[in-house]
Length: 304
Image (cartoon, rainbow, N blue to C red):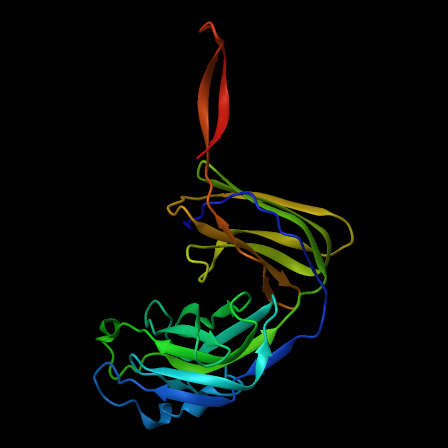
């Protein structure tokens, strides 16, 4: 069960369709390769840092062609682009890893991702595990991006049954400046009432929207899809309202909610997250007048 503590918020956004741009890393700035889980050197075929540059192979099938750089346990690599990449509200970074035949739950190769505009001051984007091919939003992190640092944080104790496991294998990085097909969002509301999250939002027009997904986060970095989504209108020139609810247990005072849109081309777009700080609860009550006489019973909503 996902956790969220939500308050009403309103988000208005008009996004216009433009051609997307795609960027890749083209320079290895520095790297420090760790060892395998058995304390050995990583195989030479997996030790070429240039394999992390350019277009990712995006393949998790063993073909005999090594097109990734194994960081080794505790290793790291810093990559750079030739020119600074401008960051827009819909700039996304996607990192690709290669683990032939294994998934994260069985073979937890993990890495921490940091970004920088000058190669000195870095912003943490979050963490990724295995071949999840994680997507990160760069908005409100930097106004331009030139450097990306990937640090292996795999727990070597999780690999005792493997021979010469070499930790996180970086296939490549892709950055895209994307703008969704036209959509005008009138409002978005999320409210938690006694352990249940209620979602309500309205679009004034849609052009190419496949569906909407609600996401939550406890740290404003790592987001998870909640088990609630709404089928988009695809094309609509009039208002359309969406509403639904899902049960939740709120454990943190401050958590985050955001709206994800998926268009008909399969692109995903993320709108501003909102920190949530207020809670609501429904109580049964008995009402009395000033003379102590019972006047009625019912439910009322309190905020705390």
